[in-house]
Figure 1 (cartoon, rainbow, N blue to C red):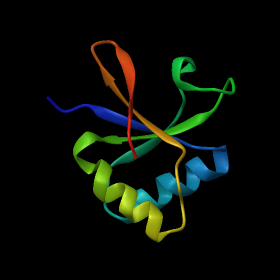
Figure 2 (tube, rainbow, N blue to C red):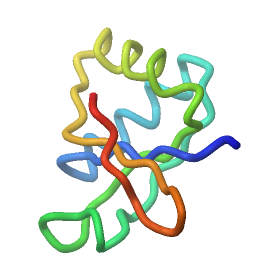
Figure 3 (cartoon, rainbow, N blue to C red):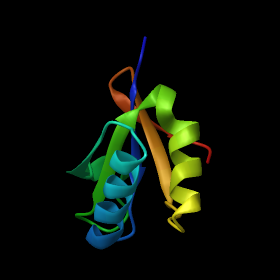
Figure 4 (cartoon, rainbow, N blue to C red):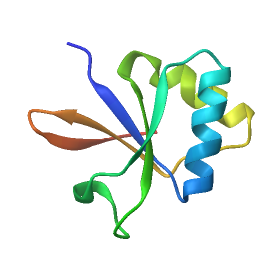
Length: 84
């Protein structure tokens, strides 16, 4: 079963930059408001992508100088942190 992954951004600007870099790299992604249960600081933003794209997408972000804080995968109705 494929799961979507949320990469938490430190700001709306970082989320926009990550989403743009992933799209240019050929990955499906979209910027969303982060779910409250995973956001440390109230409202925040995350970039959603497919689980199978996580590792190569992170490499794409690193090459662009973008370093996400955390990543989460939704399983069994709740989010689990994924080690980056």
